Length: 194
Image (tube, rainbow, N blue to C red; front, top):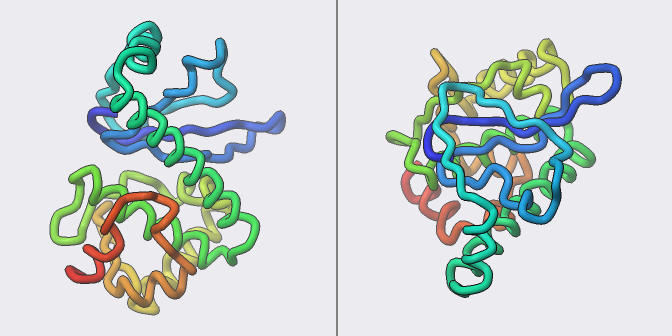
């Protein structure tokens, strides 16, 4: 990803969508396609986006001839796996309020790592339907949960501008630990600044 936001998702036979991850600038959309001939999910741009393409033979060349770059690519794959695991825990073990709060915490840290934050505010181009598809709840329930988070003074969301007003309170509420993102100092830098 060079610019924009995309989502990776799967549909079931009834047409219901489950978002698997959001990709932000700096993320690889499908690094693992070097290992398979066909992907088992769909990728869709959420806003106008710019996506770079690296041919498979170049990826193979990196793995064979550039060990430090190969290690970086492996690290990127580890992050994808860690995020999927955390999303699974999110949907399986947390309440709907915690799920949404957790997702917001993750997106703030990832947006910061991608250089998309400005004074702890970032543009969140996701609809309530899309947020619900990521955490397994309806758009109506997503709206109720967002209103609860706003009422409790944890977030502000207006005109697609998102802000976590109480970082420590939000982390506690969401049962959030940024360790799974493997971004050194990402969480501590937020605590100092928010």
